[in-house]
Amino acid sequence: MGAVSTGLGELPSVNLLEYTEDGVRLVCDSQRWYPQPTVVWRLRHGGDVSRQPVTTSEQNAKSFFSVKSIVEVTAHSGSDYQCLITGADAKQSVSTDFHVPDEFFPRTSKWMGGFVVIFLAVVASLVGLGLLNRWLQRHIRDLEKRPTSSEYQRLQMKQEALKKELGRIRILPTAGMDRIRNAAVAVTLDPNTAHPMLQVSPDLVTVRCVKGRAITSVDGGVSEPILSVMGKPPLRDEEGITSGRCYWVVEVGSNSEWDLGVASNDAEKRARTTLRPEGGIWSIGCHQKVFRVNDANSKRISIHPATQEKIQMIGVYVDYGEGKVLFCDDSTGSHLHSFSDWTFKVGLLPFFNVSASGNALTICPVVHVA
Image (cartoon, rainbow, N blue to C red):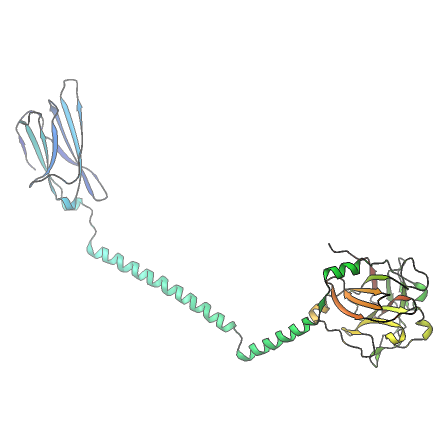
């Protein structure tokens, strides 16, 4: 490092101030100048530095100026620099040379750059392989869950059978159910018509068997319906229902043996032996967990087993003038069966036939669904 003095002012002092992202900053200081000098940074072998320096000056009490100039240099701009300070008359100047060793400049080795590129490529490949493997594993699990050809055919047949079974269940229109429920009456049990082995609750809405024998089926009908009791519609005489419309709901619960419907008021006098319309009884029943129509054919009511287990509220609707007795699931509005186009000549009474197992039947208030 060398210096040449040609006039007033101290030799500039050049030092490394700090490191930057691209290189280093150099600072040049000099004092005792008058008037204010100019500072120029130059490459020692000729030419100005590429970046604009920042120069400041201060004047002390004796009117002398001190100057400071900071410049940022990089490895690309060279390593040998000169700070030249010239007086105002351009006749006086001093300079100081400064060499910046290569070690002062931050450098990234070529092999390190290549390593970083290769490393990132390997990481990306591993991530891609991991995602591909995860997708393949999920795809394999999906394939394992898919049914085979024979299993698929069985599932299709089961689905078609279910659709066919469910297609037989007809949901009554909301307006129709509203009209039916609007005909609700408060039916009670008539203890005077109950079999001695039946027990009727004090509020006259529940009946159960305390002892007796089971109901058996003979020739598609229910024989010896001895465990029965009649009901009484309100504000009716002993003739029973002789006009208009009536609707009531019976909770069967877990009772698997029952018959519900209406009976002509002279059915007892006929000494009936079967539950059939010809004998004056229009009813449906559940025996051995199978819903059936109590008529000459003892037709099975098509209900899916899963649906049948949920049926616990049986609605009975009578339109005397239309000659119709309709049965439905009051909870869902599902139609179970209808006796239609009959000509009733005598009064009708609500009919209840219970199981010898002791399970109860209970008349419930009709709930009007909004």
